Length: 398
Image 1 (cartoon, rainbow, N blue to C red):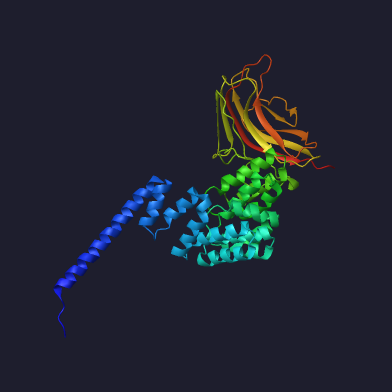
Image 2: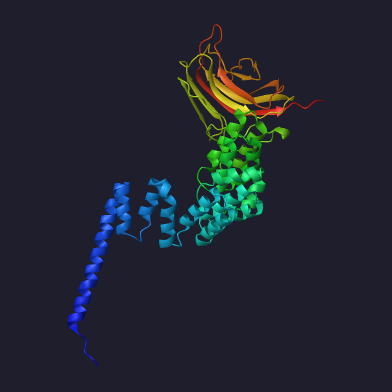
């Protein structure tokens, strides 16, 4: 058996080392040229690293008239690179060669099961009017994806305008996708559809869910859609995003925290305590709203406000229990609602109940305000006020 020549092994090792050194130098110089980003530098970078497709990607952007050649080179070098087949498919579609375009895009979708190839093919079938294939590839795109699906939903709603039916057809696996859809519907001011989606969105255990539901409630209220606003509120309450009770205007349940068990947020149908100079207000345990006034507060200051989702054409009775400890000659608070104002409250140390009736008229939403109006011959309130509870109940006809 012939002996190994140690000299030939040494030469072979040196040649291999020289080759690897030269390859590393080429890659280093190629990276430097690529960082310049100019057409000549990228051309040399592509020559020095013929197996690296990245310089050719940049050249395709810099030289649109030569882009097909660069993409063909990329496909030749890396036949499993899905974006190159996507580019080919889109180019063929623009040229009107729809059969080959579909074949190229389908090949990209087989090479890569991620979002972009699947969604590109879904868009191709959308443009062709092929709904069955569109939904197939749209589901393939949405199922593994964990990013923002707003663009997907926007296109899907053009085929299936019912958001719940669309969601069932698309079947996105990522729970936060429901919030993407809810946000899209709110931006489009489709409050009725968004309110139908609210219970599903409320079951999404991700940060920001409660805030979006309350934002939807507020936006619907501002748009005059009280029914949708109540649906948002109730979805948030049912899934404990807010520690408040649900509302039911048809059954006369109009106040979510009538005994002030919680500090107001304020959000949508919760109590609001506007900041006022000279006024300190606090709610929570022990139950009740406690307000301290220095006498320096602005005249006519609103110290508490609540939005009521009422039934149009209904008469209501406002009932409240309170205690007042003011300095002598202080004016006392009043309620204001539906363009009416109660008489100033009688002074009472504690536990006094009063009531007042009003009609909703044509409104489905009314603001109830507790204010401190100036009174002729009296000073601004100074002292303490405790509001134990407030109820608003329909007046039943005899």
